[in-house]
Image 1 (spheres, rainbow, N blue to C red):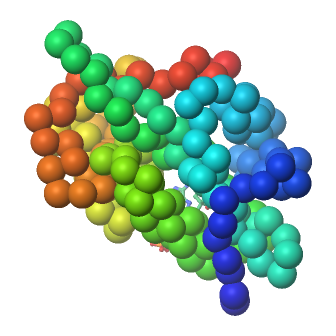
Image 2 (cartoon, helix red, strand yellow):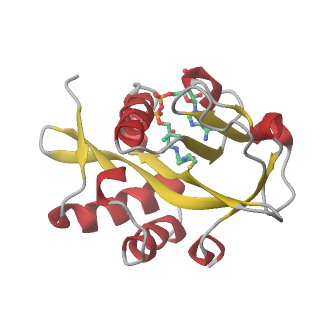
Length: 171
Ligand SMILES: CC(C)(COP(=O)(O)OP(=O)(O)OC[C@H]1O[C@@H](n2cnc3c(N)ncnc32)[C@H](O)[C@@H]1OP(=O)(O)O)[C@@H](O)C(=O)NCCC(=O)NCCS
């Protein structure tokens, strides 16, 4: 199956909303992407779609977030949400989106990515519990599902604090 991954275009917006709603089985995720897209610092190149025969079959978003502590703050990215159409799940499309997105983020100069997700899925791309860097979620969550990855060696060196998500994630 030949899947291509590319940056979103305006013509994809409706399909992306629908795809997120279908994959998650509720309307919140599509709306979340729409709201984040209108907000600074949304990075167009980090909202990426998987295309199969001219149809959008997958989407992934990396949104800039801060990791803050009493002394300072650091830039990072939150990977969320990610969706693949139900009919084509478990065919590596999600994996292709993650790998492509991490590479793109690295090329754009980002140093790390944070994800709240399944403990058996994300480690295969190099994610490990964020607690290893003393990075915490702003809510109660088991350590093994709150993960981080360095996009370059030392990308999280000396980084510690709490990840601050934009308010849209709570809406
Ligand atoms: C999560 C998702 C994007 C993965 O896409 P995909 O194309 O199916 O992923 P891949 O085929 O590359 O990888 C499949 C692997 O992910 C695992 N997986 C997929 N969704 C999972 C989930 N929600 N929880 C745990 N594991 C999951 C599968 O069990 C499979 O594991 P295996 O390789 O050990 O068998 C897709 O399943 C989806 O859209 N799910 C609904 C929305 C969602 O939960 N998004 C993630 C949270 S942001």
